[in-house]
Image 1 (tube, rainbow, N blue to C red):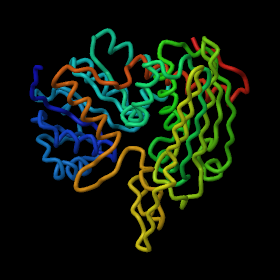
Image 2: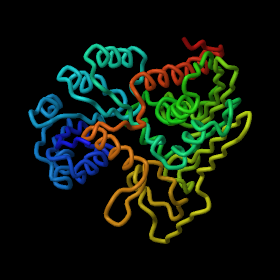
Image 3: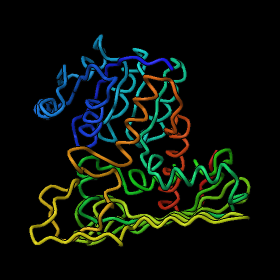
Amino acid sequence: MKKKEIGIAVIGSGRIGSLRAGMASRHPSVNFIALSDKNKTKADILAQKTGADFITDNNLNAISHDCVDAVVVATPEHDHVEAVLQAIELGKPVFLEKPLALTLEDGDIIANAAKEADVEIVIGYSRRHDRRWMMTKQHIKEGRLGEIISIQSRVINTRAQMLEIIKRSPDASPVLDVLTYYVDMVCWYMEGIRPVEVVSRSHGKIFKQLGYDTDEATWAIITFENGAIVNLGIFYALPATYPTFGQSPRFEIFGEEGVILLDVDNKDSILYSDKGIPHAYVPDHDPKMLFMQTNSSGDWALDDFWGPIANETRSWLDHLVTGLPCPHTTIEEGLKTLQITLAMEESSRTGAAVKIS
């Protein structure tokens, strides 16, 4: 197995970019890290934690650095295109945070550029790197469920966390920013079977009262070409002090010969502290009770970060240095997921079914 040393540029020094840079700094094959953020102070602070070799507020300067072989784009959802295209033009593979884009136009621009230049783009859907969800894929591949007839899933979280998302990127609705994870999982589990229609309904009150044009609840039915029916729902406006620190999903897969039930609410692991518990995503939000392991990206423990985002980042870096395959979402899969989530929003807006081509 051929191994090599690589240099990584991380574009964006927010929460997720900081985690990716931290993982890269600990990887034995990464010998150079460049950081870029429009707010250079944030990049400087992250550099102190990661020992980065190059810091700038100009993304192209980081991406084009001679020591950089691959690029992590961890900018806000609405700000993906420019940095990704810069990396593609230079022939450097990209790890792009989900979703691929917030519009099909931007998604097509990225996908077409990557295809024309033959540059690998993977999308950061970290659920694929959670052990339970990964084992589910393995059981499906081995035929234990037979043909999948139906999938049902819902995900919930607090309004406090959703407010942080829409403050950062006002067009990043609960569907486009969060339910997208579970659309990705559905398409991964239904691999090779094409979705053909989406019908959805939404309810919008809580965030609109706060000045944001965002619905808090959406339920959708996706029909696949083999007749399979998928029901996906999201409610991202639980009271701010509800003790989840991330996505709390349930995901149920029904096949002709078996069933898999994933209950990831994590209500069986509870932490209570009179001192309050810092929220990784919401500043100055320290509730006293927490359902442990609900931070869907992972958790800090014993001076390191553990969980799906850590697994996902290390897997991609291993892929770059060894050439071994990894189960990341491809650019084609990311574009299909974007098409489905946008169809959900359109159906909720118009009240009509939307065909998927």
